[in-house]
Image (tube, rainbow, N blue to C red; front, side):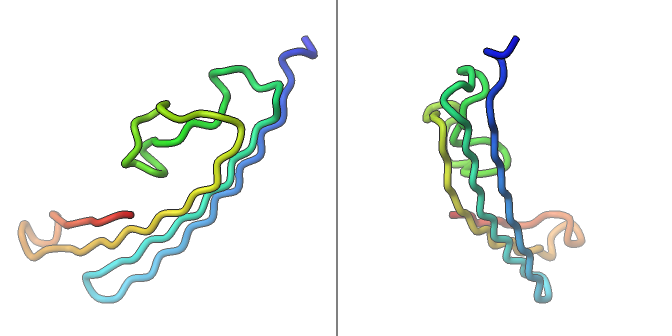
Length: 88
């Protein structure tokens, strides 16, 4: 039915820079849904892809503008298969 129609906009930009064993990953995200979006389709802050420090579903609404950066370092342990990551 026409009441099930709603608009969802998502823009996701990512960049990666590597130097030796160090990698800097940066992401910016914009998500917007209109007022007709059902509850299960609203924008949710926190997930495995952006703003991981937030509990999934704790904050929801119709607009999200977020950015995050992650610094990854490969360690010599286990032949570079184990690494460290800091994100904010």
